[in-house]
Length: 458
Image (cartoon, rainbow, N blue to C red; front, top):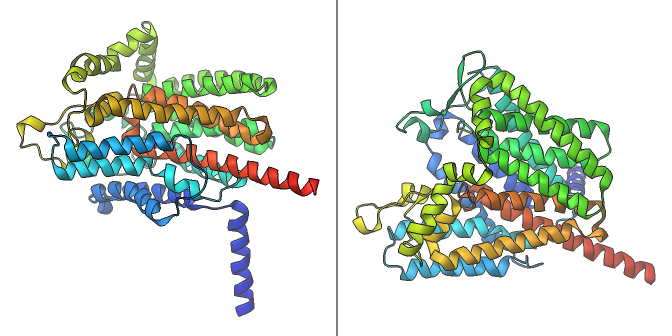
């Protein structure tokens, strides 16, 4: 009996070794688990501690893991960002409160910390692919629940976030009217927020397309395209136009990578397949979502792209440049916007009152002024540059396709900063994790190849 148990443990250990399971995989799985906890009404009242735990987990790994290994190219820029935040905390006279200021700094550190702790991971190409499949599976599952919530109203819907329930409209403003006249919440997926399935839909789309392109297995290709269709359907039905634009930009730059690397067969398959997918899924969404869905996305084409943007989010960028920049060139003081102000702010001081933020650029300006804007832009530049180099490195073989996917994802994420404060959310943390793990896996792959060459020569 003891021998049999020992063999079982060895077999399980071998499985995890073959999958190259790392802390990055555990981190993603725990993030998903924390999100699932919010779906239970009994636990939903602990929303704030659970949301904090998502970021605290990243800080735990920063302390837990050795910060040795390959230094990601954006690391120095990230250190400058954190240095600016520390100066803001110590020197700025209009911090909303010390608690809010410390929380803001901690959140920046948590979001950027994968740059430091993920570098120590012994992740290989197989490990990175396992991570991609894990994220693909999680988000496809969430997007699938989004579809079920539309087809079977009320049966697969989790309880609403307490934040939504306690808001002025109580969630009524997040209802959509389907083609059959029934009113339902925008697809939530496995979240407690109406419209939350849009993010899952994005990942299901881009990962599904990449998997369908990368693997020749017909079953994998069918499943990949199926998840992409489900993801797009969710994006359309949530009516979150920014995520649709995010997805379109990512697909365009993925195609650019394929063109640059001369993968004409894959490029042709992708362009024709994705174009058909966008069109077919749109009509599927219209058939179910009705005129409200059609009108929502038709508004993207009522004028030129710059006019459409200005009418929606452009006004916030204009206000940031013309009004807030002259007022706060060196920052407005920490803790004056977003969830940090909601959770930890003290708004009794009239000088450090909350400031409304809709886009990331406003948040950067308020938190650290022009220096923080330049430092974070530099970090994003190095992220995009690194993704491009990996995507176009022929020595990496087929693994470079993952680099193309992450590069395309990076460009889309940069575009989203003009619409939403992405880098003050879990999505920002995932951004730095995916980029760092891709880089480390590529570097480990190069080391293995060099060792093989040395062995052959000897």
